[in-house]
Image 1 (tube, rainbow, N blue to C red):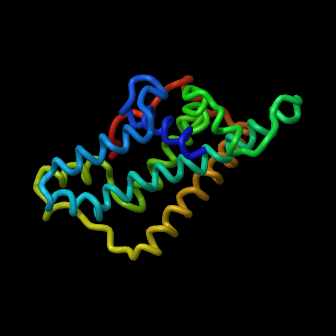
Image 2: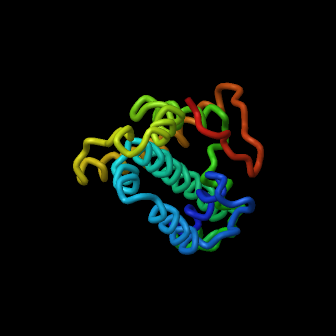
Length: 190
């Protein structure tokens, strides 16, 4: 499930032009190389930054959404006599394009909810990115223990799963704006 999610995440973050274009391990090595090319002071500033915490929160929320949406789809396939095995096995067999569809919020309202929640917790992505222009001392640091950071990731995943349920319920009652297949959220949001 993790590999399928991270391949989808590479596409949604606009790091891949085509879903599944880059293997997750290769992308991790390339990201590590890019970070290590930065001066050590900037590396340390980014590792503990509010910007990175915001990005991690959004990824964890998408992961919770991905798991919940995947479970719904597996249950549907099982009811049709097509799905079997565990959720993890089923997700491991997804095509990259299918994984993107499970990780991507189905509605623009869902996308905005994740971004809004992240902005309320961490601040504007645009403002956090602008801090990088002023050097490592200007990069705001997240003042949380490792344990608190783990809890924050769990909260984000729970938020993503709850968002899926809320989006489904709202879709039965209200007219929502559904996103196009394969679409990605626009760039940094204020």
